[in-house]
Image (tube, rainbow, N blue to C red; front, side, top):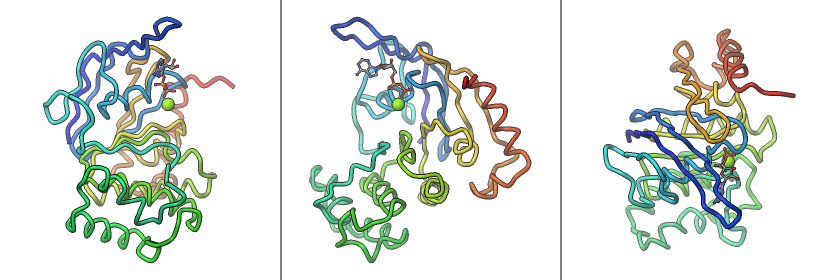
Length: 252
Ligand code: ADP
Ligand code: MG
C-alpha cells in the first residue's frame, strides 16, 4: 500500500485547553516499504498512527492510502501496540481469531490462512496453549499474526518491542521484520531505539519536538537487502546511528 501524508496538522481539544500535536507534517511511504518513525517523547508519533488507523481525524491536511482519503478504521490497516494485549483466558487460537469473530469474518478461508501463518512462524503446536505458556517472542508473533488475520496491507507498529528485554528484543524484532517482509506488507513502526530503527528500516523519518513535523529523512542505502543481524555487523551501521543520534539531539 502507498501512503501520502500531506501537510497534516492535529490539535487536540480538551477541557484544559488545546494541544497542538502535529503541524505541517508531510512524507510518503512506498508500497512494501518498511519505515521507522523516531522523535522526542510527546512529539506526536502515536497521534500520527491513530490518524493512519482512522481513529483520529487530522485538523489540517490529509492522508491518502493508495490515493484515497482515510474515512475511518479499515481492514486494510492493522495496528499493533506496545503491549501484546493477548487475552490470558483465551488460547492462542482463540486470540488470533478474536478479530474475525467480532467482524463476523471467521470463514474457513480466513481460518486456513491463520493456521498456515501459525505453522509457518512456529506456533503450530501451541494453538491450544494460553498466552502465559508462551515465551515473550512467541507472544509477539502471536500478536502479529492476530494483526495479520484480516490480511491488512499496511501495518502500524507502536513501540512493539519496548516491553521485551534487550536480548529478546534483538531476536524478536528480526523475526517480526522477516514475517512482515515475507508477507509483503508495508509497515510504519514507531521506536525510541535508534539502533532498532537502523537495523530494520528502509527509511527513517525523524520528527521534531511537538508540534511534530518532519525534521529529516534517512535512506539506509548501503544496508539495503541485509538482515537486521547483518546490518548490526556492517561498518556503516555506526555511521547511520551517529547521524540519527545527532539529529535527535539527545540530552543526558
Ligand atoms: P508520542 O507518541 O510521540 O510520545 P503522542 O502522539 O502520544 O506523542 O502525543 C502528542 C501530544 O498530544 C502529547 O502532548 C500528548 O499529551 C497529546 N495527546 C495525545 N493524545 C491526546 C488526546 N487524546 N487528547 C489530548 N491530548 C493528547
Ligand atoms: Mg507514543
